[in-house]
Image (cartoon, rainbow, N blue to C red):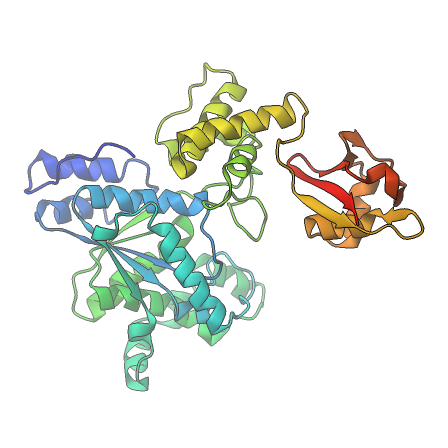
Length: 400
């Protein structure tokens, strides 16, 4: 965690310095100069982040904004974390080309609790106010009408994703058009001074200012943060895309995934996750190891990071298997085991995916790649052997 600056108390250079610190790696700080003026008031600001619990776990991409919120807390400000239990039922259309699928209320509630618990590993609980927008969005019809009058359809269609879909004659539901209004009303309900979000949220955050003014409140200032690319180095980090590093994943998995980040994405990872520039004079593999070690240590402790690095070297440098390998039971029929079915049971993949991996040479037995046509193996050949899929997944086969 970056060392905090002293909390500003007046319109002195302290307020300007604090604003410069807080906005140093943001993409937008709008309106220009607004945050400095707010900090100069010398009171704790209410800094809002809204999260729709559409997935149960948070990943390193989420921590970019969470760490920024922590910087506000370190300066004495209050973070208002809004769990969008109500807006998740609408579905945020930001960056989407189609309507999001609906989640059940049970799934939303379970995801919300998991997210709140995991976010507390970054945020200071004493300076965090957790709210659910179901508290105020389950409103009377006349209140919804009042909210709807604060914006026009033309204004909403200026948003990039709506404009693209409208131009392509793709459907946009009335419910989706309501989403930015509901998010803006969150800022009214919690009297937000500042709202944070990714760059894809810029329209919504600025609309929140208009809605606050329509309700007679001082408008919030806005900070947008860069979106962290996934470990593929191309698309945004997302669990649905499989290119994520989860904050609750084991240290071996965290370290191994980070070592797969392309060299071209390293500068972004350093800026957003380590708060330090990439040393271009170092060999890329050394920088990557240092990053993987630092982030694994942040999530699991220094000792776990050291062990994870040793585990990585054993698998990928020395080409060895881990010390502890989970057993999987297999049944031999007429003396042989059907490998696709075994892969399904051992690694939770479909049998067809197992066949594809075998054909691609992605399955090893005791370190040796299996032939592309190895669909059935003799039971005595694999009893006690180590089955490997990919770089980090191992099971020891036991014939029952």
